[in-house]
Length: 370
Image (cartoon, rainbow, N blue to C red; front, side, top):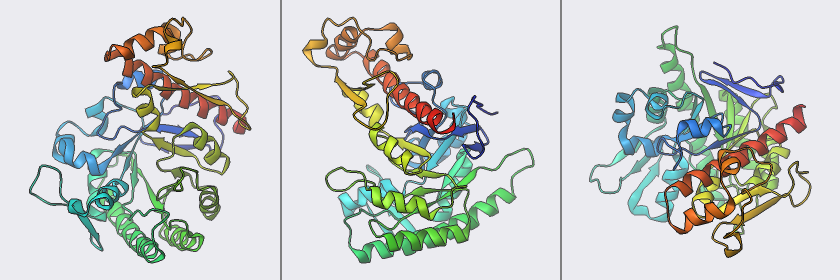
């Protein structure tokens, strides 16, 4: 199965067992196996080519055994397009950084204490590959040790050492598992994750080692923003330069529309983030200032659905948008649903924000590939 488009171009897509991801591509976060408030058909109609699910969370809820008993992630969620499964290293790191009682990270992997459970769980490099393959993912992402850009040099060095070691273990486990596939099963892709915080030297050390191990693609690891919320452009640009252009690179966790545009201009191909869908549910709607935006100025605007000035507006959320929401419902009606706390609001708002991102990436694709 392939999702061909008129602007297919050599090296402009990633081929997976469940179809192509055309660059640039935005993948909504379906962390626990679903994108909140919408279903698989909503996603397809909004132009979504793939989603990102999370191994760390899925192994706890609904549990790895439950996912497998329901036929794997595609069957469970009724989503037949590509799925990338993040290893969960970032999520585990975030929890442990917030409070050490949640677990610890050592050379063997991540030991964590699930909320409400007395039993500790272990996520090793080998275990995360085993789980992702058992889930039926299209892209396996190696377990890495995440850091914050502001962490000490010593912490960054330790992160890079472990990330490289874990990547080698992930690659070995992946190859062993794929050897056992029946001929009818197509192998997923596997991505390594480049760590190194804000240190260009450590980014190079990590990238060089991962290239030596060998992967189908790579991810930018670590928090991509500085303390003021600005994109770490120098580090992002340098990391992209370290990876030969024939390999795709996933800007893990980057999904704000302006950051997608800038990161794409720096050479990034794949984007994912929960922000667009979370913003939609909380009443912040994305729109283009012009129907055909030029990405060299202020092209993005926000609508805050609770604003009283929208009360009687018969206009769509964004004139020119072809999503279900904009072609059927008014801004005033959306505000009414929001004020009534009706469950229809998050579905319609989420559909629109997702469609805005897929329209954005389609425009960027058209500008680059024609």
